[in-house]
Length: 164
Image (cartoon, rainbow, N blue to C red; front, top):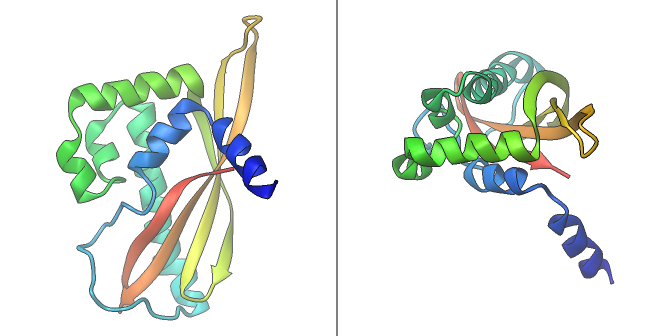
């Protein structure tokens, strides 16, 4: 019974969240992938280095959709996905996002889950679009970015994406 509930919830995810979710989770890195294991972070490292990396990632994510900037979008996807991304695919992602979620109008950092090795930063993304009665409505989505420390002042994105 529990599996059916999870399956039904997954089917309700908007098409664009699924499409973007396929492109984004666990794929963005600002540095080359490190072969060293993730290290524990001090509170200062979490509040400065990891948070700065998460904010840079989200600024690129927001700019990619707000400004229709493929270069910013490339910063939030993996190298493998970047190689496959074309302007046509990017435009389809933008169109699907606008159609399914609406226009991204606001992004707000809402907190961090202190997980010692990974820090997971949470954002509330607010979208606006017309409903079936042509009334403007806003919907919020939860987006998370998990950051790990790979060395002195080096941080990597371990996972990112929309959450149910």
